[in-house]
Length: 360
Image 1 (spheres, rainbow, N blue to C red):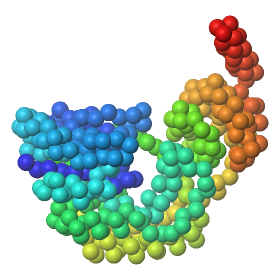
Image 2: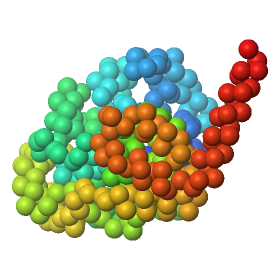
Image 3: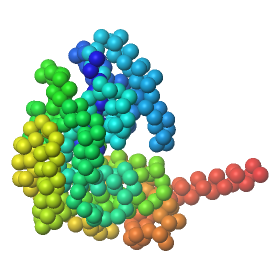
Image 4: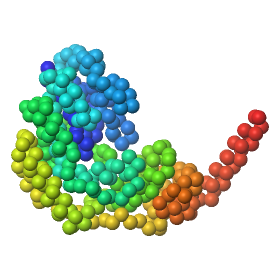
């Protein structure tokens, strides 16, 4: 049986691939491929098949021979010739997986570091509480450095590497390209996925950066969902043209070295496309208080966030105001929230206080 581990890496469309695979498990079985089912969050994002082969919690994960064998048996029961796993978690555990599964093949995508740089910052603001401005410390893609060392340890022949570039995808789309990489004919199946985990507009980045200062996980989740659709959707850059060209030259040196050393499908064509990559219109990370208020009013009007959630954020911000950057936005929050919301909240608080007093 063929055993494949898709390891990402991060920022190479893993969520889109996993969303399609998890939605088409029956079709995959008909093609002889067993893909373990897993859940997706509201953004269509998940940890993939992490728990199909690893056990443990809170970062202390261990490869589980029992879990792995269970999936082998399911694949055999379905008369499948291929067992496919997908998770970005696998990237940092390639050596461990290779030791436990000597026949494992590893499939991954290579994305140009200059594109990953800005995409990773966007994601850090969206999901990881980043409050600092975009300020890259270097122009070295750690993913390539790490992957190169892993290939040296595990062996070149066990890797299938593809370029992450729309012009080089089969049918100009990621999913059919991935399916071709693992040897599955997708000519007769719908491979569309829709938008998964879309990037923020510049306005959304600046609003979320400010709210990331507030300690509320539930608020951050709701705000993330609300901001994903805000803005025109036009591509932009956080690098001016001079910075962009300087960074591109440095990333090109690293990518060229990687492709010279390792086999990548259509690698030379990928290099050509990266060389001709042009900058998008530069956007400074600036947002006036009036623009801040406009964004909040819009996402509430679109019913993507409630006034109650904003009032909760306002109360949190009041408590944190001595530690906040741009504390004047507390007043903007207060301005956006209608008076009746504040009155209802105060009445509820008074009733709760009275009820607590009566029970003593």
